[in-house]
Length: 326
Image (spheres, rainbow, N blue to C red):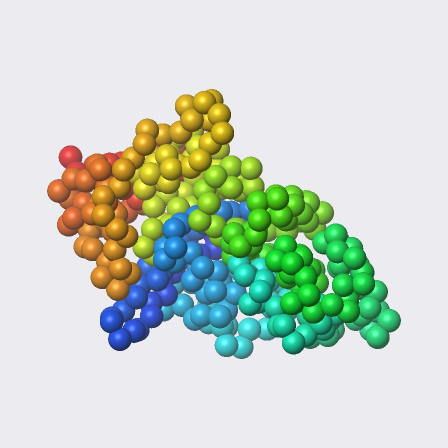
């Protein structure tokens, strides 16, 4: 068990497999991590790594194939179909694309009043309007947006509405599934700053899912790297940039764009990966990264490495850091 008294979310050996015509897709294949009260935990990976599947399993959209999702110590992984209203109020999600997550046929008022009504957070019509106006002011939108529809506002404004909807129920835990990736850079910064302020004000815990590792430097306290359904490395965010261990983490960091020679000097040596990311239907035996790894050893193609702790809070799943290859 990896439960600690200050963990709000604990994932234990979580698996989520999908049966397709091509075969079984192991979208998430036995991962474990925890999110502490009040922290931002970053889950980073390329497209197809399985990170969004983790979010959808936590929120209850998917039922785990195996493993546990524990919220405040309680196993909620079997409550996917009949999740309690209290739990739905506590755990909320902000999706990547607000253009598809907001119903275009509903006004902003209708979108924001729905969670208030479902969770009985309003007493009457006037109370609903007041709370909706408070939510709009909170995300820095004019109160007259209450009459607008999603198609009438920009992408950044839609995402602000989506954030307001997520926070309408006064949750404790929010999943952020690439909330800024579909937005302009200037809008991204505004929303990131907004999310940081909300976290401090409302003592929120975030699971922040992204493909942008550089974003985690100033946002997350700890980061996990995913590749083909498994976690490669977990460490404090600052440790990732100072001492990345897994070859895949080093590859991601070495490809980050920088704007100064000082930042370039801090990056790991450029790593050129080989080949393409394998299909999740046909994951190679042994370490799933070995076909692309410049440090490949014989054991890598035969045995899947296990997570080992190399320093306090810094774990890595790689044969380079175990005794099995000696």
